[in-house]
Image 1 (cartoon, rainbow, N blue to C red):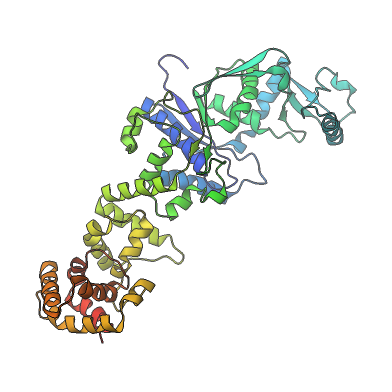
Image 2: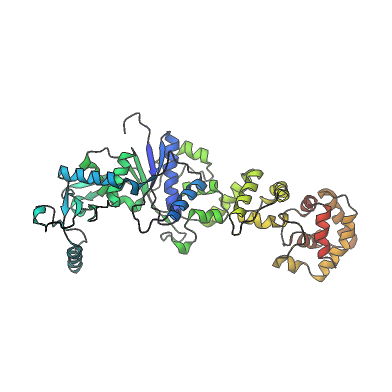
Length: 470
């Protein structure tokens, strides 16, 4: 990278499944550095595995990136469409003498690996065609193109996160660049695409560290500029083991569907392997301002779902009411079948939101506590509400109704009337309020009762309350 050039970073997922939480963190770190430095953030879909790549997975990756708020510069690039360019570079390496044709048959390679297993040797290509004349092969025999890797000395990956990592070249075999059917391998395609896209920083998971040593050999063989590498430690589950399905959701969209906000996920994933002093709550704007590679941790980070819940609660409380109504509306419309809120329901929701969001830790909890606002009419009772509406409680409700009916229908007036009624009958306010709450909302807990009575209005409230009086 020249002194005045802006950094170019990329996220390059394989569309063989959903956008994984680890991939989302990788994308986030690349995006943050690009935005921090005024550089570019590119998206490349590495769809060379034609059997496993699916349009559904591509859509899931794009949707997950958009939901996370990680916008990319320009159009996304599809690796498979560039296969001709990858083959061109393989031909250039052949012409330079830095690659060669390998005519080993699948059967020969299988036999080679079996012999290595028996002798407890490392499983790698033994270079049998490295220095042979291609004329020794049968006419028309299929061949792969292999890199003629350095076989002495060492390759050093200067890593922004892990420091210098050294690889003995005699442990790096002559990897395949083109398969015998002419299709390029992932290892070749990645290097060519990064070069052609002008990528200056390759920031990815630590599981790619070995790939870096191999890819560097292609880069140096072509005489191309070497990008800066940074390999991020993996994410572990709460128990310290590698994050897997048994720990819970892995896909970004699953966290959206569990009711987490995208800003929560950006903040939480940022703190999985990066820090800025003791700051825990870091807005996206602050993250862009502060982000650097020096503050990345070298060891694996652990998911902490309790911390994620608490952080989401913070962002729910600090998010504007109209944005939360939009989140709930979108959440319900994604359901099968979609649930569409009426204008009246959205108005009620907006009015109730200051009370609703105080306790909720997820959008799902917001919806559960607000469902009684979505439609009119008598409520079905959940288990807690059904237990509250004992015969005694129903009798209390019956006796309270005339008091409320004679009261000005405002939150303050209704509460004052209920308190006076409780005192006059020798009851605690809770004994009067709980049956009212259960009948009004169908739930055992709710936002402030008297505010909700006022919000729903006299007519609608009395329809619900009378249904469970008696």
